[in-house]
Amino acid sequence: MANATAENTASATGQCLCGAVQVEIGIPARWAWHDHSGPTRRAHGAAYATYVGSWRSRFRVTKGRTKITRFHDKATGTTRGFCALCGTPVTYERAHSPQMVNVPRALFSGRTGREPRYHIAIAELQDWTYLGEPLVPLKGYPGVVWERPAKKKRRQVIRGQRPGYPAPDDHDE
Image 1 (cartoon, rainbow, N blue to C red):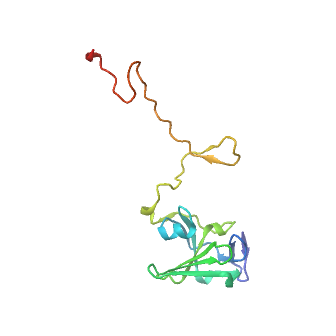
Image 2 (cartoon, rainbow, N blue to C red):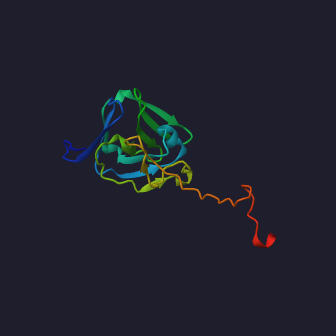
Image 3 (cartoon, rainbow, N blue to C red):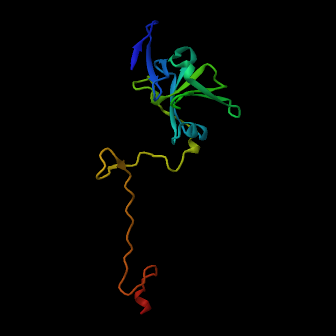
């Protein structure tokens, strides 16, 4: 949801699952992307996470700053902030761009001014990631859809032939 701040600039507000932590960024966000890296998959418990990047000067925690707990990964130089009550990831900061704060896109219920057009660590894409295959409703389960598996071709068994063996050729008689 876009709001007007004191400086008369538009903003987007977001929150964690329990609502204890709320954040705000100036819009449009600087960029948006899908992150397929292993650390992000593990931090979010998902195939990938979508982030919006904001200049640090256009980001603020509007509620629950003391409820954010941080994990610093020395190997990658990244710091991830999580709500200490519900565990929702709320920030992702990288040492090589200290002027930026990255926020999971899912925290925002409204527009952020950027569409995610980039994929980071695409080489780490998992084979179980949904890639837009056609989905159909699952009978008896309202609101549930599934990927119908491709129909397997049934092998025709000729009378007298044992399954798994090739059919006899005409010239073999």
